[in-house]
Length: 365
Picture (tube, rainbow, N blue to C red):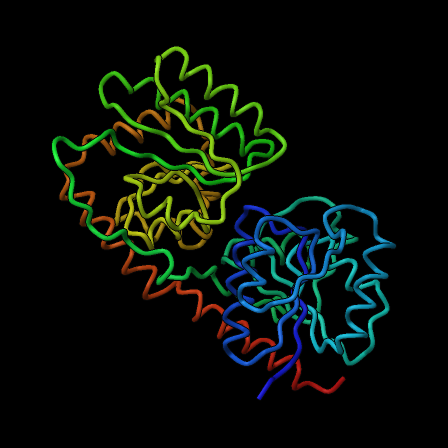
């Protein structure tokens, strides 16, 4: 029997942690008996949602054309008899709060990031899900969200989809190490990619490698030009810029080392791959099994390390990886995968989110 009709609202469905989170959440909620709809400005994951039987509605929730978004969200809620709207960014949350929805339509949010500004225009719904403990503290301190209205539910990873590749028999010597970075290429995110290209070039003479950069964004051209310059100097394709991809699980599974933070880091961990934590908010270096507790509280973003991502830092982390024996790489990968299976599965995440829905829907209007 169908439970409730839930509308998941986010800015867009291109490459990004919140976007992948919503796709996984929609799939699992459907399996749990919910009727799930998604509203966003669209993107490369719309087709994947369709494959799960989840309808998508094109709404300009990525910009400040609020009157169009208000009208569209109000129409969807009315025509589809939505019971609950779950917003995953501040523009969708603001639109949901001001759209004049019927009282029976409940409203919650998820905070994926510690955004600054717009303190008095941000809306948080009847309940706010924080993906980490540091974001919970930030919501309380900066946005003055009452602690009793916040619940921490970490991001979840599909551990069946993101799993180690099957062994492949190779003849002759193995090829260069394959390093993968997955990220949006906007602002400081693109700076991380540019610095990583420089770091890889610095160690290339000692450790031949191939770097693959996955993602799209406003500064993709900058990253592509830097990659092309590196390849010209080396006379071969050392760096490949792949753009937006929806088969990230295949790319990660075939890698030797992944550079990223948050959800990307956990997806790599689920694939039993060593990880360098490097992102726009911090640098954690090569993730050792004994360091995991340092990063649990900030969702593996290295936010709390207060360290910038530099070429020298990335170079040192890459050197640390290449100096580790094969046994370390294998054992570390297995440890990280078991950690994700035990604590960060997407199904467990969706079940906890569904528990929040049921709590809200059971309350009197």
